[in-house]
Image 1: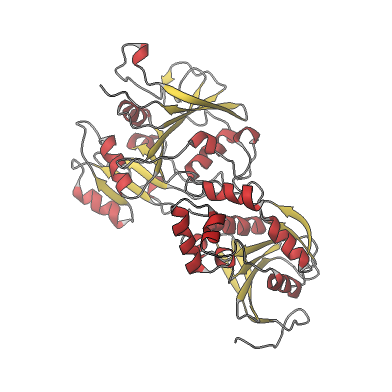
Image 2 (image 1 turned 30 degrees about the vertical axis):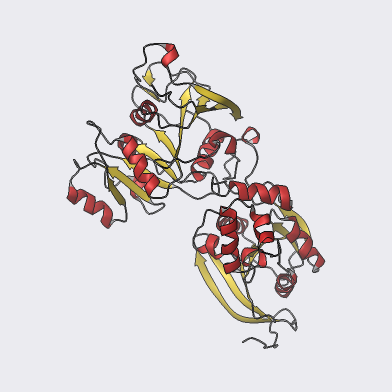
Length: 457
């Protein structure tokens, strides 16, 4: 097909040929897909919904190909999350187009060169300097062919979904009327935080990770929020991941009533922050009692981000087969002990659930052994959301790096406390916290601290 100059769409263009058109069902709805070949041999896909011909202010995303992010769900960038968020946004609007630009891999330097740049980034370079170290352009993309595709579709002006000012300028220079720009922030992961900050500071992108926590307002729309100030500086250790404990409580220090009810102590704005914190970490961990009583999904739903691996501590495999954490919406690991039934382990594994057997501390899963197993599997950060037994055990074991407490404006009275007995007889022997950070989220207040390491004897 390369070299064919037989235009078939939009009155024709000497560098463009439509080669196929087909409906494509996706989780976000059915899109009309049209494939265009340009003179370079590159293929552009236009995924659209609604009428585009003669269209003004058409919602549009020009998405640069990113195999690692789009298909392999890499956490080094935000590309895959932006792709899925854009498709969802267009579907919600009922009219729009996503132009998928092949040949734009790695901001135009190609897949292999992008991977070579990853090596430089692992040596300390940011996403700009990595390219420069290898003698590559920071951004080699050209938007003329994408503009031809939009013109051939009959689009007259667009609302562009992007954080990148260069895309806006490039399309305008290519003759596209960009009537407005709508940012497309996604929830930051600790592995791509530096990359997102570099895009903002050095490439002029709109805040890729969303607004600061204090600017979050209650809204039913899933949107990003920058939680880096809550997560803190992620520094995994050789023997365990970086551990963040987070819970929501009433003003009088309860995470649930005496009957176990905990929904919802905090408000919607705070829960959006909590979901963004999940998206920032490699894994989210709870005890089996939480999985049984609350039956949580432990996925990211209130922010546009990746769901972390769900980890359940369950010494005897009491988790019900119907538990929502065993669904296929995210990866799940159950950490158990040799007191569990091997047949039950096999049943879970047959469902695609990872089962890891570690040491028993005499009563339940040894949390130090569990965290060591997660570190060996590649996890660098773990968010612990409960319940009280797990929170108490990790604090008592001295394996927590960051504590985040959301305080809701409600009094419960007698109820469940987040932290149980730690064997502390004097105030001076309590677990010390430092580097306080305070934020408002709606009517709730979030306070985060670093946990001071235990002093050795």
